[in-house]
Image (cartoon, rainbow, N blue to C red; front, side, top):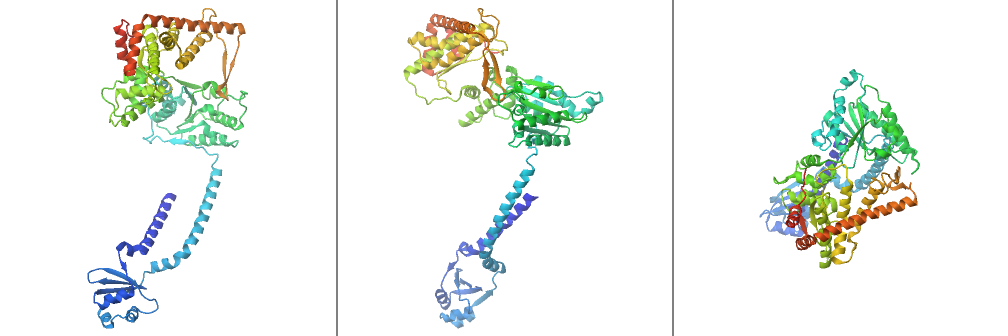
Length: 616
């Protein structure tokens, strides 16, 4: 209603302004010429006038040819007396049609009062604006402790999400079906004396669909969905967060059955009394109020509290005890079948060519989350639109994978022929070692085009989703990582900084094999080094406690070096044996800069190396 009244007042002011402007400039808009009284008298004596209209001091005349002119008369005497004083023929004036009109009352008062009203109105407007801001500040002070949750109502079809819109989390959806069933028909559970879990904690890596799944639960159950981030509870003033928690649960209970969703709950639910990072009274009071509200539900109240986090290890134990967030649902990264299903969802509203094979895209995206796949499809659509095409092709999707992983291509980067040759042999060394070793991942693409911070890259992807990694596979990956280093040393008798990232990755793998996975025969099945992240300061400032002696540290370093040297010898043996294949791959890269999987397999197959099968 306020908005409607404001619009009406604004419309009236605009109309009033238009009338005033028209009254002042109407003659100019119509193209009326202003003449002097002497000229007007000349026209009268010549007999060229047909009509005279007098309105106040304004005189408007019409000539025989239809031309309209205007003039100003003297204010104290009549028009007849004025014209005769200027020499007009009295006889001609008596024969002419002269019309006298009263000036408009509205325009008269506007013209006289407007110069006085404008300053007065400006002063009133200034005080009104200042008073309005003060009132708004007072209202904000009273509403400071109210909840700022966004609400998605069940009849909002635009924002409603269903289980069919979520893919890749089938086990999690099965776990949450009973929550949907309880919200739809709570009497069935209450009749038998069952207590449905009040708190559901969704745990998983970033981008796995925790928020989307919570919205889908509300959509399937057809209940209001109250959503906000945990950080919105925390304010500068102590007690505001607790007040907002009380207001949020009060709103949810009024709308029951309903779902309250708190995203990134670790922002306020971190372990209390951890020591590092100090205390935060506002955060602790907010957490205490959430715990109290979770305990304060009656048995017949149909309110489900859902929360999401990717750091369940830092949550306070009081949050996780039975009766609070006792139902925990883990969302893993999707496997190849789930990635294909997610791709189908995100390509649903886009123009995709019929030749696109989403299975092949899914094969190239191991380790991608649902959010990564959504970003991938969006990048492909942007790439197609940039080239003025109406549909998304298979190559668009494949190129967007590399853009998401490594960044955009840097085709404009100019490198010398020598650097180009070094990069070609470096990447050919990686690819050839990967093609020969049976336990290494198959090669999907080799290129010497810079992308992101990489001068070139070899895209290797596993042929199947794996959860367990063997020692043999680690050794193969070490040899592949050192393939570029060995190729540079063997071909150019020199080394460059291009292998620095490969060496870092290989060293990390070798150290993990020794100190974390017990894969060293000399040290045995022992884990060395405790990794405890500071709860309040985050991973960057985590403490790495050393729980072994200097003697053991020396043995670990020797074992790591041993794994690296063994991988170096293995890569060197392969590249020396297949030196002609290395030259063929490098020359092909120098000529056309990139090799796709099929073209690479054709080259190695021509030299008797059997390509690895790809796909499940």
